[in-house]
Every structure is written in structure tokens, then in C-alpha cells.
Length: 293
Image (cartoon, rainbow, N blue to C red):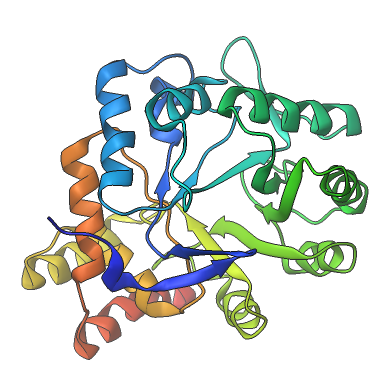
């Protein structure tokens, strides 16, 4: 059975995690809202995640809401001692499934309490503040007050480490001036490389960078280039995209999500894929072409 040891490890706070993790978002229903189509299949995916050696799971109580956290608890509690569960706060779901900011101090504190209860934990290893100033992507705006709320919850012993998500470089600097930040979770992939300098800077400081949407936002031409490279390497486009991220920088931690055991195994196999230099050059050209457009 393939495992993810070949991808190496990196520090996430005081934990050492394997660089290929798992994102639980897709275990909820359509639109990340409501229960899964197949509850037994969702539980099987989570158990296979741990069986394959993954020790970093990304989740949130606003997935569902509550659905993924409750599935994680049912499938995996009592948790393996080396399993690191990371959650995020800063949003809530409307009755229609809409994504709404939840940034008030009382909302943030309640979100941490909800995550603890639904996961069955006494302390959450890492809580990411998901910035919802612009729900479609990072936008400038002060986040000091919210980081201070998380720092207070950390002092209370409810949160062990703090991360931030959907943030700009200025917000990263602001957050780090208030508290130790152990990870940054932003949209980044072959076609979206606006965070290149940030990835490098965080690597120098030993801070994890966790990209989401490894295939998100590709144009048809960019997808065709990726598919061509994947075909030559006898891999899937997702495997190539994940392998590129693993080779991009040692501080990158991946959290690809799926609701299928077969697809999960395909993703894990990306840890075994070493991209040759000519393939990396061709893939890097995706972003170069985007910059010229």
C-alpha cells in the first residue's frame, strides 16, 4: 500500500506533520452544505486517510455546518496520538447555505467552542482565522482585533496555535506582530502564483504555507498544458499539480479533499511522483503566460 512518507514532513506549530494532508470540506453535502450523500462512504474515506499515514486533517465547523467535524469524531475518535486536526473560524452559514462573515469577538469565541464540542477535543491544535473581508479572495483590512481574540483563547488553553487564511501580505505582517502565526492558508497553485514571494518568506521563517484549490481557477489553455504533462508522466492532472506544489517549497503542506476512497488513493500517490526539470519548466510556463496576458 502506498503511503505519504516520501513527501517528507514539516513543522506545524509544535507538531511534525506529513506534507500531504487531507481537507475534509468535500465530505459535506453539495455546496459544502448539509449531510453527505453517502455517510458510510464519508466515514470510510476518513478511516482510509489515517490508514494511509496522513496525520494532518483540515476542517471547520462551518462545513455543513457541523457535518465534517461530527464525521471526523465518529470515524476517528479516540484520535491517533500523532493526528493534527486544524480548523478555521471567521464565517457562518446562512439558512440558504450562503457564506457570511462571523468576525465579532463573541462569534469567534463561540466558533472555537463549537469546533471543540463537535470534534470532541479539549484543545484545538491550530485554529485558522479565515478572513472574510472579501469572500471571493483576499482584500486589505485590519485583522488585529480578531487576532487578539484568538490570542486570548490561546491563553485560556482552548487554542494551541494560530494560523490565518485568505490573507494579504500586510495582514500576515499585522498578525505576526500580535501573535505567533504557524501557518498561512491561501489560494495558490500552478496558475495562481501571486503568493510566490510570501511562500519564500514564510519558508525562511519556518512557517507552513497551506495552499487551497490546487486546480482552482485554471483557464482551458492552462488545463490543457497540465493535462499534456500529466499524460506524458502517466499521472492525473491533480497528481501533477500536487507534486509541483510539493517540489515548489519544503514549507508547503497540502490538504487535497475528496469524498472518494479511490480518489484519495490517487491523491496520496502524488507523493511518489517526482517531476523532471523539463516538466517543471513547462508547468512554470503556465504562470508566465498568465502574467503576460
